[in-house]
Structure formats: C-alpha cells, structure tokens
Length: 310
Image 1 (tube, rainbow, N blue to C red):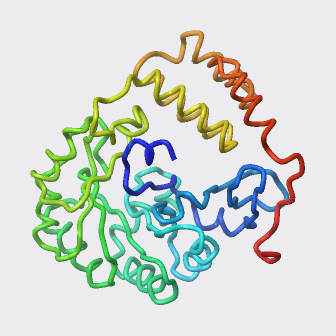
Image 2 (image 1 turned 120 degrees about the horizontal axis):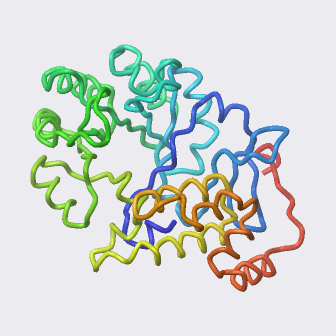
C-alpha cells in the first residue's frame, strides 16, 4: 500500500508456499477492511489484502505440483489481480521442496504448472526466473515459458549461485527480451529512480521490478526526489498500524531498513526486537496518538466470515 502511494504500478506479496495456503481459511476482517487468509486453528494471518489494491496486487506462490498449485491459487484468485509462480528463489527450503529455483531444471513441470493454472483460472498467470548457466539456456527456457501462454515473464539478472553483492547481468536479460514477443520484467540492482530508465534502456524490458531497493526506501518509485528513509520508515509504521499488519512482518521490514541504513545494535534496533505489539512500535516512533485514534475508530465487534459464508 505504501509503495503504491509512492508510484508503484503493481505490487507483489512475499512468496507463500501452496502447502501453507491450503491450511488456511478465508476471512473478512471488518474492523480493518481486509481479506485475510488465516491458518486454521490459529490467529496466524498468512496473507492479507484489501479492495483498494485488488486490481494491482500479485499473489506470489511457491509450488512444485500443478494440481496442488491450482488448488491454492483458486483460494485467492478472486482477491488478487495476478498469480505469479516463483521459479527463482535459491533458498534451501524452496529448492529441497522442488520449488523456486529447483524448477529451472524442470521445464516440463514448469509447463505443466503454468498451463494447468492458465486453463482453470480467469486471472493472468505469470512467473519469475533467474538466469541459467548460459545465456542460451536462459533464452531456451524463456521461450518454453512463453509457449505456455503466460502474458509476461520476470527475469532476475542473477544465477542461483550468485549472491546479492554480485552485479546483476542486465545484458543477459536483454538476450531474453530480444528472443520473446511477450513483455519481460527486468529485475536486479535497481536502487534509485534513475535506475528504472537505465535498466529499461540496457535491456529493452517492458517493465522493471524492484526488491531490496523498495524494501530499503519505498519512495524509490516517486518521480520526485526520494524521501529520507527515516520519514519513509515512520510512514511504514503508520501503514502497519492502519492495516493491523502482522507484527513479525512489520518488524522484519523495519529491521531490513535499519540494517541497510544504520545498525540493529543501536537502541532503536533493540527496542524493535523487544516490541511485542504494534502499540509497542507506535510508542517507539512517537505514534501513540495515531495508534489510539485508529483503534478507537475501528468497529468494536469483529465477525470474521469464512469463504463458505460469503
């Protein structure tokens, strides 16, 4: 919601594994105005969205099975604009589960997943990949993905073995753009507003995806001068309070911002770690009055409804 205010056209949720979503039930949180997917038997909100972002939020999913992936996508398809299959995550958890970057070596499974979801859902299905061992291999895979009928493909300009400190290979994204007729979304080393035009010029991509740069300072999307990260951080806390964001998620994002610009060992970082509620964070950032006003104006009674009762 924050980056959208600063100018982002499309926003992605964090990757959520299909197994996790299938253990959830859909509920309407009338107090906040959100649709939540809550793990059954708990208060653990796995995914939350709202009507204001309905036409531009992408549900990013991890899956290694077409049928299971479809079942999970069917749960959220009426609440999001697009379902995107993550085929680039290099984390051990994803790879061991056959998801993320593990799919890069399984083009038949990729085709099965994408075509199964496309045939059975009314919203667009996209995916994101990383670079393979050679530019030719990446182009070949991208062409096979295009044949599955997806309307767009995102390419992260790093290989699975590359680390964030390794420069993104924009030239290899350019190879993919030249080989495909569908729009390619370029990703990698976009940290300033001027980088949008730089990577589009270098690659010929139709669009640009930002990850760490948006985490560190969401105002990267503003064509005006980037705001100071301290101001953005405070606005992020306000948004978290307004939408009753998951505390773990809020703390994680705050710590990512602080680690990039400052140090978690300073009093602020330690106070975030000690915070047990959003009210604690409101107190830390001198937003107690705002917190009380927001909470006071929420309905006193919340009646979460499952999807079966809507």
